[in-house]
Image (cartoon, rainbow over all chains, first blue to last red; front, side, top):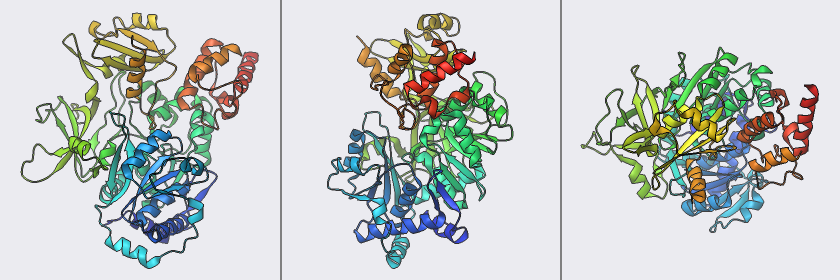
Length: 506
Length: 76
């Protein structure tokens, strides 16, 4: 049984050393190069006396950054990715939390890193370290002492209070995730991933570790291509990309701008999507463009290591019907708890809670928030067993598939009526000229505010909604936006929207 | 051009679009901006911006976008 993710690298480098592992289209690293570079960096960390410590990796999304991740783990440390697009304020909050002894940079980030208040951390440049002689014996010793419960990364996710929370995961949960995910995606040595998500979120685990396990290849697609639908599809065709795991926004960009009238992805066989609801109108365009592809909806919180549920699309959906998030991966269980902490019956709504060794170690250096979200399984008073409370509300449909209903925090009561903001949003989005819609609830003033993007004015939209929504669901205020603010991850930034609203409220 | 600049400034009030180039390659405009921009341009100039026009070269500066609009108008 694999106990250390570096075993994947150690194995694959003996099988296909000269194959391209990671590439951005310009710079590529073979498995041999990833192996060599990661061991040089690990040896540098060892020489510097950095062991069992968080190491901040402040680099552009690149093959080198991936090699730096593996080097950190090889040295018995855990990586903390921060991105060149993050605001300095956020990076400072991360540095305060992890107190890393080292910040690893590339040429692009070096200057910015030097201007940070690093709290005594040393700033070093990746390319300066690649000639470090490999400390063979020391690395073997580190490997021998490693446990599968030791951490390998901390990724920061936004916190409701504004301070980011560092989710810390260990070998065991990542290995368990990879064992299950790669079967579901059908990864093998012929898989060519096109990676869309940034490397500072756990979403990148899918491509990064699957590539190591199977000797696949991952293209880290340049971000600017996600503004250019036709060149993006051409890029995918050029590199024969056959597997993508993207946020829905990225897929929607291609289809909604009409790229399929010019070019279709010729090699795509597996299209996994998640993190957001896929509007059926756009989803259907994708199915038409890639009729032979498998479409898989993935769902999971960062706190349970990547994804933990999947649904392989096997039927058509009616307008307004949600695509299920399906069933849990093997070796994890989804429990739906009602507010009284009893289990929801089929069809009833409950908070989605996750059980299994997919659970991460918790929030780094934050025992209070960890205890709030990682709690003793209420069904088991007999021995310690944690579950993670996602704050998402779900229900089982009549087919036994899990359906995401809403966030726990977005259910409101208005004039005694219970309203899911998601329901209002879905109804607005069904209108032909609406691209997206988000509602926020101002509890103080009892005001439901709708923000939307679309080709219709605010007043006519309100008229359109009368008759589509129950009267008690009609928003008080309707505000048209040029775009819905997003988090770094590409999800809707509801907290940002609420801030915008409060700043304009009289 | 004025109308286009207004659309762009609504999207990113912090950017000086008369002088900034590399809007795409430097990441000033992201995926969602482009979706918004294309729909605004289509509506305001009453043109259909087909996918083949949506390239980094055509969106890298206000001037490039304007040239694209004129090209599409002349086509129609």
